[in-house]
Image (cartoon, rainbow, N blue to C red; front, side, top):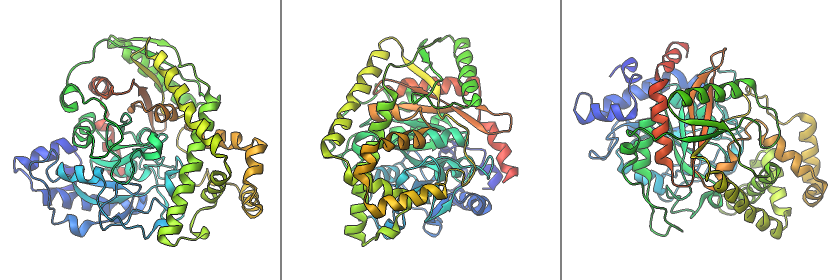
Length: 495
């Protein structure tokens, strides 16, 4: 299979070709490796390759994706006997003792793993520029970030290395790279895909695994492969009324859709992001949906504080694991990570619990909103992708961070109010995605718009818990009304 031919197909179509013996899985794999060789040096999307193993694919012939290549994200999605570094020097020797449920099901679905994609350290940033792996670049403009934390996956799929790649989303890490790379990205409902066996709820329920894809049907088919409980999961959610691949082929009923474009944190929103939402709203009206401006009523600053409190606890716990199990040292972690770790260790336990309990406030507010609207529509991101290195911590702030670490000033920082400023600074460019994480509701980024300088601009839809089917139906309708697959042809010659 020639590379040019390979780039014309999504994962569902490639599987169909293999199933009908029009091409072999080995030929498809060779084409994927050829594409990786052609573009990865410029993108730095793949941080760990398994090409030698993939060249002799052993796959489940009856699986949905019988022999299609994919990449796993190097954060969770553990594969037995292979490293899972979380983008950190402190976990570079973290070898998985067994497959995660995600990997087990993906393998049962017939997928062949080519390797792992880069992520920022611990998945903490909306850019993918770890000290371990270096910066990953956006294929639409290699001077810009592909977003994070699934930035390596976003870049790899947009550039055509694989038709879909593993991603997870604890604060927007599926949807942000989807928006910045012109891809479709669905974050499922809490509990839809098992996080086992290593954890019951990833990031105490804020994070869910799935994929970024070029087509809606690939995402729906992969959701069918991955969905369902595993033994020992903390709770079950009702299965869909039919496979997601079937549901998405049904036209959605006329929907009531609330629209908002202002940041919940009162931070600036780029005009390109606002324009994309307004263009989409007009398209929705032309398709027979009812659209009006309305936003959920919740305290945005409280949501930012709660989200950052989650960061603190999760980072401290993962640092402890790296130190206790892998003999990592403080110097193995990036400066920003060490600062967050200190703040996690100095946050009072009652304060952490209070913030976790506040997630209920956001869920109740969103529940009230969904009594009037079926979905919400808003920007996926607040700003266009930053240039590589633009969001590095400035030297003066690095100096201040080192001083705080030396003085062990975590409690002082908490009391000073500086944490609120940190929350705003860290979330200012991507203020729209965290709501779905803390409420456990599904949300998707759809690539319907491109800026005047050729960059993708995603728009986000959110739905009530368990309503992935409605999102996929609407996404398929929008994909048919405004197809985006042809946009990827511009990347074939440009990389």
